[in-house]
Amino acid sequence: MSMLTAGIKAPQFKLATTSGSDADLQEALGKGPVLLAFFKISCPVCQYTFPFLERIYHQLKERGVQIWGIAQDNAKDAAQFAKTYGLTFPVLIDDRPYKTSRDYRLETVPSLFLVKSDGQIDIASQGFAKEDLLAIQKSLADTHSATPPALFLPTESVPAYRPG
Image (cartoon, rainbow, N blue to C red; front, side):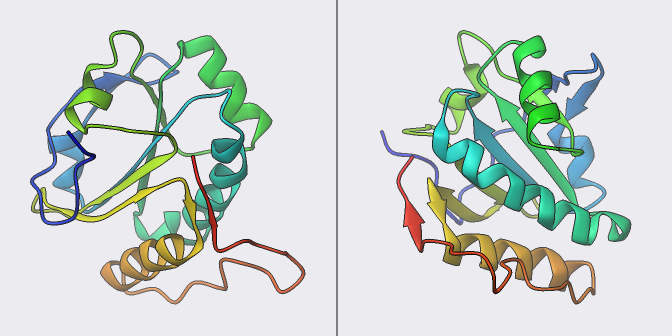
């Protein structure tokens, strides 16, 4: 069973955030697309990827962009990860037995799913994929009628891909 792909209806879920509130995907989609970013705190590729996700969030949050980190860890450890990597978007907890991760058929982390307002997965990505991050940024910017600055800075040496 492979990871869900673009064009598939995203499984609905409700998970607790690190702050203890509930996040409901169906409710959030009523406000626009949601980028779901599954991770484990011990994953070096997640540690590399998430600051770029924060950069997208920072660029577009005033336009209503929604990005959710979904940790396969406990709330305390996930909150520390968010603090360490400067994440300001919500972090949700999908702890054992990882029901939501299983519903999305994760094979590795990080795994990203851009879910459009109609509930369809628009972009699905595994590991760090520069091209996918650029496509996600463009899709979110287009949806929110924004023109964000470059995602990758000229001073950064960013690989095209890093497997998760």
